[in-house]
Length: 507
Image (cartoon, rainbow, N blue to C red; front, side, top):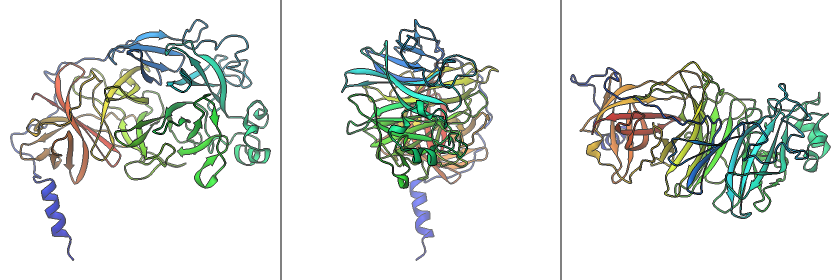
């Protein structure tokens, strides 16, 4: 049986018009006449974790920073910095608190190089079983000597009273006795799995106990995902009545460790960190967000996402794969990296370490920090809305949210026009994705300077499909405002772990 004619007919039916550029089309990229603007978040916040509570939005970040907002754009400080008067973190510095017994201060078992406390990457959640807000965070001394712990409060703004240590990493033959590892793994397991023959930590196989994020699954079970570089990303179940870890039985065939939990992704000290799992009941997926690259401006920091039908995996990308302890750039759908768009004053760089939230009105948001191409390492929080494409993958909108509404359907007559388009690829580097011009035509065709293709909308929806040089990107299309306040039509579409964004001015 010859399939070629059938395939050709299907291609013509799905994408009826594929054409080359016409003479009247201008592919010159110019921003003349487009007002510029900037999202002035006002409060620097590294590694922001977002939560909605008490009619506001809150973010909590590294170095004991917290802020609130009413519009997801401008933030007001709630607390900032390492000092005893920090009203969010409560009793961290009180004598006898034991927060820094293992890591974080110069007086800890493993002192820091600078003799200062290090408190990183918190995550806040409301636990209805306890009737408390819970703050999970890490203290750390070196690049892998770390301790996860948590505090509780009656208020989202704290103070959070430290409760207990949870997981230790980076221990050695000399320091393991200061941890609780021996309660969950016997001496032979510790020696053969966690330590080298020299008695040092097997960091390429086991996690760095930082970057905790907690979530409830669809059945009400409570989970902790954590990890950074080192052995990768790990998952443990928590007891919702206490907030403490439920340690699993060892299962090496499924990469389940009795102390550290289930290994989800990564290893080999590849750049993977900042995990965050969001259960999306409407989509029917658990989305695992992580960051790749180094966190400095030119380190290629970026957001990736994987998904699973169950909270403990397996989490896979658009190709049905996930990274192990090897080169990982090709794994995971890249949602955001370095980019420049019309109306922005300076390129966004190192957009990473995100959290995510589904608001009470059903809108989905990603909150991350971003640096800029301005010669500094300054960073600010930025919140963007995202939608779900026809295949169930997140598609991030290009500009900071103004709490716009992604409609249920979009008028196909409003799609055609001249679009500024960027493709963020899958590389991990400091290259800035810059716009090129594509025309989406009334007849369903697409043309660019070196690109031809077609587009179509799924009837009665916002789902747009773009066939660009033989590759089909699936995404969403809607109206929003750019950084300068102009009303624009935007699309965000994904294919083979790449994201493309398009922006059209005018109706």
